[in-house]
Length: 233
Ligand SMILES: CC(C)=CCC/C(C)=C/CC/C(C)=C/COP(=O)(O)OP(=O)(O)O
Image (tube, rainbow, N blue to C red):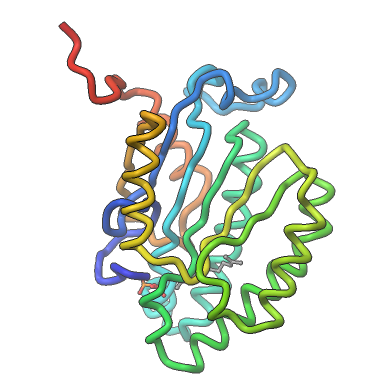
């Protein structure tokens, strides 16, 4: 990941790793459906869930190294952590999840690792389509697609097309994304929509990111006094 020297794991777009980005609170839009709200673990509240959560999946290599495993094993474990985060997002009523998977800078990794990751992305997307259809998950793949292998581009397009009418969860995978460009885009978007983000930092390596970590991030989000940049008198 762009800032993989950092010791931590999740989220964000505007800042270095170790961050969980919890953007755009939107109580009504983000509220879990009534039937699912009952499944929310305490102390999570359905009335002020973030509408959109973004995660930077940092820490795969460190996770693998700590176990004497190749980095590929860390990426496979990262895949499982992502699948669990998708499942929890849907179950808890988070409407949009963006996962930053592969940055522009990651292209300079060893060829064998880049090829492994491209193959993994293609395999995961292909294998997930049936589940996405079953669970009502809409997939989008963003980033500089022109640099991706043609077969991955094709698989991504097919998955996007197949899931385009799903509405339970918007899942966005950022592959070949540019941190710098994202910052500019986010600033423009913030200026236009008065949107607001909260960041959450965790030391958990992405493959270990599970329900407790996600819950901690969301509860932290809900416990913050949100002023949207305005000072209260
Ligand atoms: C379809 C899909 C998105 C699959 C999920 C697989 C997955 C989690 C990919 C992320 C790849 C990646 C470059 C992670 C950063 O960890 P790192 O290697 O930089 O680890 P480090 O921070 O310890 O150096």
